[in-house]
Image (cartoon, rainbow, N blue to C red):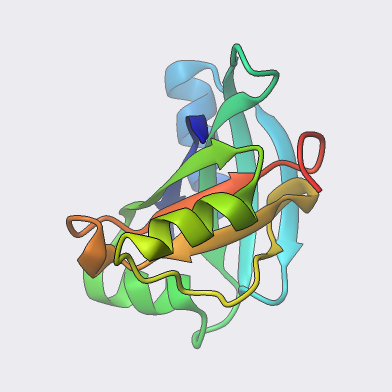
Length: 143
């Protein structure tokens, strides 16, 4: 069962500049940052609030580290902006299987490692009203 909006992913050309915008404009601070070599991104998670299920909601700022990454290709086509929405779940495997049984394409056969050690998968945007959708089980709540 999906329990919350885990994060909104925002693609950007300059992570440091974008972090500074969100800090100066809204007072959001970096909660976590990392480089995900597999996905070819440098990211910063800005914590917005805690949620009733023990999780939190974040903005995830994404800067590509190489031109062949999915985010780099998306930026070249669309420019900066909202890249995806992610829903939190205690069971990414079960929810992905359930959603797949309803005819929605799941992009990964097996969930991958995402931010902060989470387990993630994505749903095809053409099956989700044009929105790239991520399912996330945080490292502290999931398998």
